[in-house]
Amino acid sequence: MTHRLQEYQPPEWAQSLKLIPKHRIQLAAPGVTPITEWKLPDAPEDFKVLLKRDDYTGSILSGNKVRKLEFILAEAVANGCKHVISAGALQSNHCRAVAASCAELGLQSHLFLRTPAKEASELKYNGNFFLDRLLGAHLYLTPMDVDYKDYTEVKMKELADSIEKESGETSRLVCLGGSDDVGMWGYIRCFDEIKKQGIEFDDIVCACGSGGTISGLAIANYLCGMPYRCHSIVVGDSNEYFYKEINDHLDGVGLTDIQAEDITTLYDYIGPGYGKNLPEHFELISKSATETGVMLDNSYTGKAVYGLRDLMQNKPEVFKGRRILFIHSGGLPSIQTEIMVNSLLPHSTKSKVTFIS
Image (cartoon, rainbow, N blue to C red; front, side, top):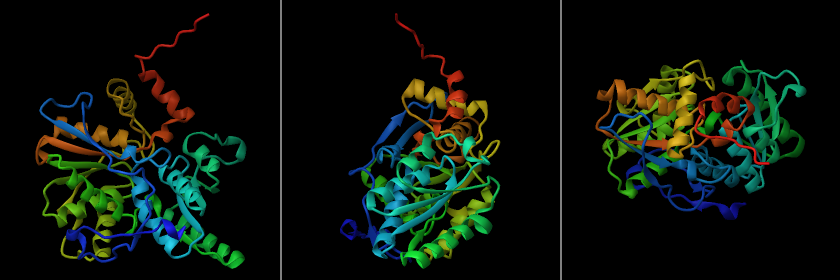
């Protein structure tokens, strides 16, 4: 698959950074994802909301994950890796994108997935979990409450060692969400794409589930003189955790004279917990679909848009202006599960079902 490798040339304004990737593999659909105006339900009338449609990056590869994997898997291929090992929740969008990308590139994916199930009879093969299996991933199911650093990452390294010992083949370990110093370049590149689209706006908003997307966007915005104000809606873990993650990325690329708080603002809208929802989240997801045709997921974009709308309604002073660009990071398969169907259907009152005899 080395023939798929493309030499990567960063934008001029990013060429002073450290750890610049040498290669990229195009995994997303060719071309530029569009920026479109969005009539966000119940948004204040004095705001204009635009969508960067990164849910259009492909079919099963849709979303922000594929932009990160274009750099991560290019590194894996260039280094001769035959296996890719990553982790996430049972319905992880990132893990599904890893499985799909690896299948396309002839690599074997291995996924550590957190689940409350204790035995095989309790598993339901739907949404991303079904796609993982269909795409040929090797799945390793772990308890829900395990710590990534202390448990899952250790198991991932043990698996990589075992594979190399048995076959002589090497593995690329990919952290949660693909949000390492390599994957982050997916959104440095995305920022350059946005700049070239020439659409006027004041603020950028995205979901924050692992930190790579907002890190790339905020670093690129800083390097370009801060033309926009960057915001991220935290949907998992804490603001403190993600400020540290962003600071680690800043250190990684050699920007040691600034702090995360200088280039972005985080807002905690995790609600009941990661992947857990309030009725208001489901109501918004349903209204967005019914009234605008824009699909949101329950873990990331649904919560992020809920947070964005709340800030617009109750804390408009946090924004630089009234023109907001929201990064739509995909995630549709994760709502195609029995639990999500049962949660969303009560809010979908417009649709009617009639039997014709």
